[in-house]
Length: 174
Image 1 (cartoon, rainbow, N blue to C red):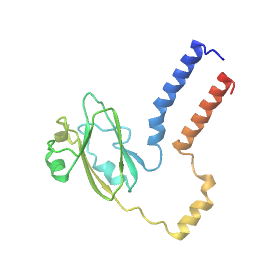
Image 2: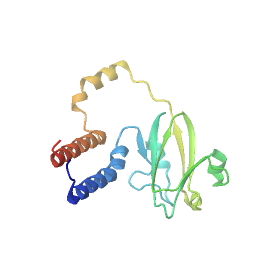
Image 3: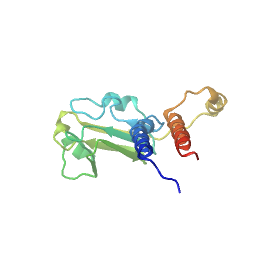
Image 4: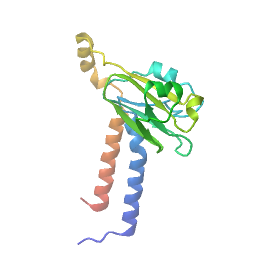
Protein backbone atom coordinates (compact mmCIF):
# COMPACT_ATOMS: atom_id res chain seq x y z
CA UNK A 1 0.00 0.00 0.00
CA UNK A 2 1.37 3.40 -1.01
CA UNK A 3 1.93 6.11 1.57
CA UNK A 4 0.89 9.62 0.56
CA UNK A 5 3.43 12.26 1.55
CA UNK A 6 2.23 15.55 3.12
CA UNK A 7 3.73 17.50 0.18
CA UNK A 8 1.46 15.58 -2.20
CA UNK A 9 -1.57 16.44 -0.08
CA UNK A 10 -0.59 20.12 -0.08
CA UNK A 11 -0.13 20.05 -3.85
CA UNK A 12 -3.54 18.45 -4.35
CA UNK A 13 -5.18 21.03 -2.09
CA UNK A 14 -3.50 23.83 -4.04
CA UNK A 15 -4.72 22.40 -7.35
CA UNK A 16 -8.21 21.99 -5.92
CA UNK A 17 -8.21 25.63 -4.80
CA UNK A 18 -7.16 26.77 -8.29
CA UNK A 19 -9.89 24.70 -9.95
CA UNK A 20 -12.54 25.97 -7.55
CA UNK A 21 -11.44 29.56 -8.05
CA UNK A 22 -11.49 29.34 -11.85
CA UNK A 23 -14.67 27.27 -12.27
CA UNK A 24 -17.11 30.21 -11.79
CA UNK A 25 -15.18 32.28 -14.33
CA UNK A 26 -15.30 29.43 -16.82
CA UNK A 27 -19.01 28.95 -16.17
CA UNK A 28 -19.67 32.66 -16.67
CA UNK A 29 -18.03 32.64 -20.09
CA UNK A 30 -20.29 29.93 -21.44
CA UNK A 31 -23.04 30.72 -23.89
CA UNK A 32 -26.34 31.14 -22.11
CA UNK A 33 -24.76 32.47 -18.90
CA UNK A 34 -25.08 36.22 -18.32
CA UNK A 35 -23.38 38.11 -15.48
CA UNK A 36 -25.55 41.02 -14.36
CA UNK A 37 -23.63 44.25 -14.85
CA UNK A 38 -20.80 42.41 -16.64
CA UNK A 39 -17.45 43.24 -14.97
CA UNK A 40 -19.04 45.82 -12.67
CA UNK A 41 -21.35 43.24 -11.14
CA UNK A 42 -24.36 43.82 -8.88
CA UNK A 43 -23.71 47.19 -7.22
CA UNK A 44 -25.71 50.21 -6.07
CA UNK A 45 -25.99 53.51 -7.96
CA UNK A 46 -25.82 51.81 -11.34
CA UNK A 47 -28.51 51.90 -14.00
CA UNK A 48 -28.89 48.37 -15.37
CA UNK A 49 -31.06 49.39 -18.33
CA UNK A 50 -28.02 49.45 -20.67
CA UNK A 51 -27.19 45.88 -19.64
CA UNK A 52 -30.76 44.67 -20.17
CA UNK A 53 -31.02 46.48 -23.52
CA UNK A 54 -27.92 44.72 -24.88
CA UNK A 55 -28.37 41.30 -23.27
CA UNK A 56 -30.75 38.78 -24.79
CA UNK A 57 -31.88 36.08 -22.40
CA UNK A 58 -33.70 32.96 -23.58
CA UNK A 59 -35.44 30.12 -21.71
CA UNK A 60 -32.85 27.88 -20.06
CA UNK A 61 -30.25 30.66 -19.81
CA UNK A 62 -28.60 31.49 -16.50
CA UNK A 63 -28.05 34.89 -14.92
CA UNK A 64 -25.34 35.44 -12.38
CA UNK A 65 -25.09 38.08 -9.69
CA UNK A 66 -21.66 38.94 -8.25
CA UNK A 67 -21.65 41.23 -5.23
CA UNK A 68 -20.13 42.04 -1.86
CA UNK A 69 -22.07 39.79 0.53
CA UNK A 70 -21.34 42.14 3.43
CA UNK A 71 -23.22 44.97 1.71
CA UNK A 72 -25.66 43.50 -0.79
CA UNK A 73 -27.95 40.60 -1.57
CA UNK A 74 -30.30 39.73 -4.42
CA UNK A 75 -33.95 38.76 -4.27
CA UNK A 76 -36.55 37.90 -6.89
CA UNK A 77 -39.83 39.76 -6.44
CA UNK A 78 -43.02 40.48 -8.36
CA UNK A 79 -43.48 43.59 -10.51
CA UNK A 80 -45.19 45.63 -7.78
CA UNK A 81 -42.43 44.90 -5.26
CA UNK A 82 -39.85 45.77 -7.94
CA UNK A 83 -41.47 49.13 -8.63
CA UNK A 84 -41.86 50.05 -4.93
CA UNK A 85 -38.76 48.28 -3.53
CA UNK A 86 -41.01 46.25 -1.23
CA UNK A 87 -39.09 43.49 0.56
CA UNK A 88 -41.99 41.92 2.45
CA UNK A 89 -42.89 39.16 -0.08
CA UNK A 90 -39.70 37.74 -1.60
CA UNK A 91 -39.96 34.90 -4.12
CA UNK A 92 -36.27 33.99 -3.81
CA UNK A 93 -33.31 35.49 -1.93
CA UNK A 94 -29.56 34.88 -1.94
CA UNK A 95 -26.95 36.56 0.24
CA UNK A 96 -23.66 34.88 -0.72
CA UNK A 97 -21.10 36.55 -3.01
CA UNK A 98 -22.14 34.79 -6.22
CA UNK A 99 -25.62 33.64 -7.20
CA UNK A 100 -26.62 31.87 -10.42
CA UNK A 101 -30.24 31.40 -11.33
CA UNK A 102 -31.65 29.57 -14.35
CA UNK A 103 -34.59 31.29 -16.03
CA UNK A 104 -36.66 28.55 -17.64
CA UNK A 105 -39.73 30.38 -18.93
CA UNK A 106 -40.38 33.38 -21.13
CA UNK A 107 -41.64 36.49 -19.40
CA UNK A 108 -40.47 39.15 -16.99
CA UNK A 109 -38.35 38.50 -13.91
CA UNK A 110 -37.69 41.16 -11.28
CA UNK A 111 -34.75 41.40 -8.88
CA UNK A 112 -33.90 43.85 -6.10
CA UNK A 113 -31.41 44.30 -3.29
CA UNK A 114 -33.27 44.01 0.03
CA UNK A 115 -30.71 45.94 2.09
CA UNK A 116 -31.99 49.41 1.19
CA UNK A 117 -30.04 49.81 -2.05
CA UNK A 118 -33.07 49.18 -4.24
CA UNK A 119 -33.81 52.89 -3.88
CA UNK A 120 -30.32 53.55 -5.33
CA UNK A 121 -31.15 51.76 -8.60
CA UNK A 122 -30.04 48.34 -7.35
CA UNK A 123 -32.87 46.58 -9.11
CA UNK A 124 -33.20 44.73 -12.36
CA UNK A 125 -36.06 43.80 -14.68
CA UNK A 126 -35.19 40.97 -17.06
CA UNK A 127 -37.23 39.88 -20.06
CA UNK A 128 -36.73 36.24 -21.05
CA UNK A 129 -37.68 36.12 -24.71
CA UNK A 130 -38.45 33.31 -27.07
CA UNK A 131 -35.30 32.01 -28.74
CA UNK A 132 -35.18 33.11 -32.39
CA UNK A 133 -35.46 30.33 -34.94
CA UNK A 134 -32.38 30.18 -37.17
CA UNK A 135 -33.02 30.44 -40.89
CA UNK A 136 -32.03 27.35 -42.92
CA UNK A 137 -29.36 29.29 -44.85
CA UNK A 138 -27.71 30.64 -41.67
CA UNK A 139 -27.84 27.26 -39.91
CA UNK A 140 -25.94 25.58 -42.74
CA UNK A 141 -23.45 28.43 -42.86
CA UNK A 142 -22.68 28.09 -39.12
CA UNK A 143 -22.07 24.35 -39.40
CA UNK A 144 -19.85 24.80 -42.43
CA UNK A 145 -17.67 27.39 -40.67
CA UNK A 146 -17.70 25.81 -37.20
CA UNK A 147 -13.98 24.96 -37.33
CA UNK A 148 -13.09 28.66 -37.38
CA UNK A 149 -15.20 29.62 -34.37
CA UNK A 150 -13.26 31.15 -31.46
CA UNK A 151 -12.60 28.98 -28.43
CA UNK A 152 -15.03 29.62 -25.60
CA UNK A 153 -14.25 29.43 -21.89
CA UNK A 154 -16.04 26.11 -21.51
CA UNK A 155 -13.35 24.56 -23.75
CA UNK A 156 -10.66 26.35 -21.74
CA UNK A 157 -12.13 24.82 -18.59
CA UNK A 158 -12.02 21.39 -20.25
CA UNK A 159 -8.36 21.94 -21.13
CA UNK A 160 -7.71 22.98 -17.51
CA UNK A 161 -9.39 19.80 -16.25
CA UNK A 162 -7.33 17.66 -18.64
CA UNK A 163 -4.12 19.40 -17.53
CA UNK A 164 -5.10 18.78 -13.90
CA UNK A 165 -5.63 15.10 -14.69
CA UNK A 166 -2.22 14.94 -16.38
CA UNK A 167 -0.49 16.50 -13.36
CA UNK A 168 -2.27 14.17 -10.93
CA UNK A 169 -1.39 11.22 -13.15
CA UNK A 170 2.30 12.16 -13.00
CA UNK A 171 2.16 12.62 -9.22
CA UNK A 172 0.47 9.30 -8.56
CA UNK A 173 1.88 7.52 -11.63
CA UNK A 174 -1.57 6.42 -12.77
